[in-house]
Length: 303
Ligand code: FAD
Image (tube, rainbow, N blue to C red):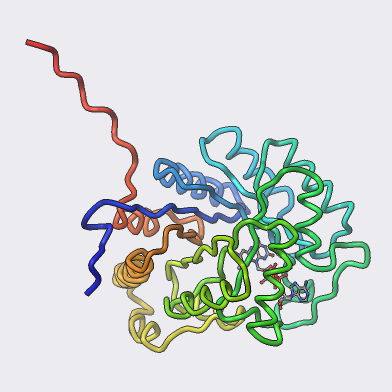
């Protein structure tokens, strides 16, 4: 049994960050902001807002991030991809973020315009690789740049070593943090971390945690992105297809187990893919000791 459980001792709380996606409708917008407001008092190190495939959410991502700058105490990061855009177009987006007061970008290549599984064709006048985008961002402003990392390798990479070399190029171009694709077996993450360090990469590699809100959907997404789904995880959700209440409880237990184990094993920064839903993430943060700051105790008048 592990000697250290921060949830019991209340010390060494991890830092957290939260990912959101830009809303498509007024209803989704309301639920996004409800989640943002609920998670904000946990004082995340940063929050990030994704960029739709092929840049399809350019305006919505920008508006969401800008509203976070203007109306919250959060430090938002805007995701940005190279897909289907020239360097000049991407540079305009980067400058618009700088003008809006955004100082952190999550730089990505993006999926092929033809969808996952098709061949990626860079735009002829665009950034060819993510490392080129990272360098472009750093040329434009003193942004913090975060990139992706793949503990089970990116599906297009020839090998894990080749993928880690690609990560190294992103770091050499100026990335100062990576967030991993989600995974369910923590040993996969720790083995990856050892390999990354052996390639001379020293930046923080934040584990990306996905709370399984819907097992079928998560398993389908995992298949496409090369993340493995252990049989034990499938077994835990088996038979709960028509029982959302129990599914939610199981999802919370599975995520708690994963996160507590990561923290027990020394992980100090966690990144949650919130899917714009706060409850489960809030509960997990509470378990690792993150609570909203309470109001100062009332002064007792001297007798
Ligand atoms: P890259 O690092 O660009 O790698 C892609 C492939 O190219 C790999 O096989 C890699 O080994 C290879 N490669 C990279 N650089 C080089 C190089 N210099 N030389 C040779 N080979 C190289 N997608 C979105 O559309 N919007 C988002 O907001 C978004 N957010 C994400 C956030 C996170 C944390 C993660 C993990 C993924 C996200 N994605 C997002 C998905 C991502 O766009 C896809 O996985 C895409 O297929 C790869 O882009 P990348 O920047 O993650 O990978």
